[in-house]
Image 1 (cartoon, rainbow, N blue to C red):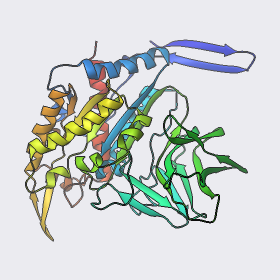
Image 2: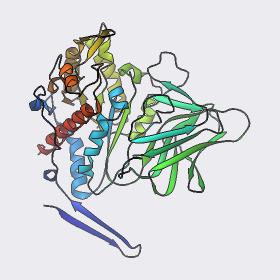
Image 3: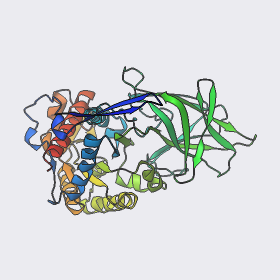
Image 4: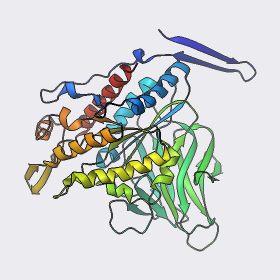
Length: 418
């Protein structure tokens, strides 16, 4: 039964109602059945048997449900499955069942449109001026990268960025503070990022602690327009690594970071990864990196694990108490010729690596490879219009399905914790 806490602040004419809840109030979302999906495997497994690390994360959700207190940050990181933000966004939207009456902000966003690559459909990016871009999948880069693995940059005084969150929906992710992860390339103060809000120009204040710019907005909004004021006639390049819309509402914030084609070494090569990861400060990291690593002809499980060791080391330096969930690679095929695809056997090897990593780091595993039907199952998903013809990526219906399944696995694990 729900209990209600009433808070009255007469002087400020403020009123707040908090509905105290428990995990029993949370339910699964509907997921359609298919004969090839192993529904019995839709669960979070603990190969090492030690639940301490993961349970510590879920106990933070207990505190939020019971007291309405605490910010909980989840980071889902991967390649193209995450950049498209259909899978991760489905999980994000489902988690609003936990957030309840509290509306948390959207989480990390990047203007992929400016970088000439696919942008998530749940926020719209338009821009003006001349821009360049870099991604962590490029071998020869001229710009250092941060946690997002991608950057855009400009020295054009007329350049602007416009972002609207969930523009085509009644529901919109609002914020009253915007954090910019960016900098003037030459280290000078000759460019100032500004927000154009209504008829005001709001300058970004440099937060020395995080090395980010913070913009305080007079009232909550769901969109922003950013420009760059140049203080002399010489060209100065401003680099944008991403944005974090913020507000102080308690609850779960689901950050997603993905770069098409990215492997584990792609993120290891990002010079400012650790510094910017600390800005997000995740309590739980969901690892979805591995599908591109496993396309290598001579894929090595040992090398794959070693790269993950380095990546996890960075995560633990940022937050030693961070919990981990590993998503095994989906079944996939390799393109041999224009119309010929062969199943990729490395999916089996990568699956073993994820289970071994989870055992070593007391993490959980969501075994997508097995629950979708195992080796060669992607054909069946494609036949049901759940996967694309490349037999690597899912369709929107497929991403929605696995997003719902993962949410159910998380909720069912949480509800069985004492």
